Length: 208
Image (cartoon, rainbow, N blue to C red; front, side, top):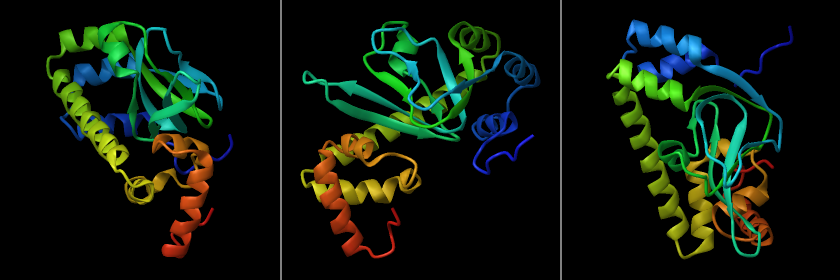
């Protein structure tokens, strides 16, 4: 077997993540171990298509995924980017079981442990303590969404770029500049200009 990448997480890491919020009950842990489905996605493979209904939440153990929406000119606007240790879903579609308004796609080769909607519903009904995990995760990603929106509200594009570098250093080298440009609502050309300015203002901060 080849060497496992150092940034790849295991199923035990998924359980440790959940245990950080509240200790998983033994029965619940056993249930999740049996029902979490490992899935692999190739680069550029669509995970959730716009106008289809999301049916699982995924615990990312390897790779990068992003969500984007299309405007009237078919330009992509990146909503969020997730990596190892994140929990990803087209959350509104999953919770309401209505068609997604965004596309979720793998940026790189990605592995997730997926908990499907009916299994999630059963776990919440059978082990009420699992509601705490759901609440903690929803709160975490709701606050992250507010953080992203605050970043995009900055009028000055260079301020948005600097804030991006401050908040998301782990994106460096793993997410294409054109996707980061759409994440902060500027063109790729403008992003390149701001990147050169940032490299000049912050020597050594960027190496790509």
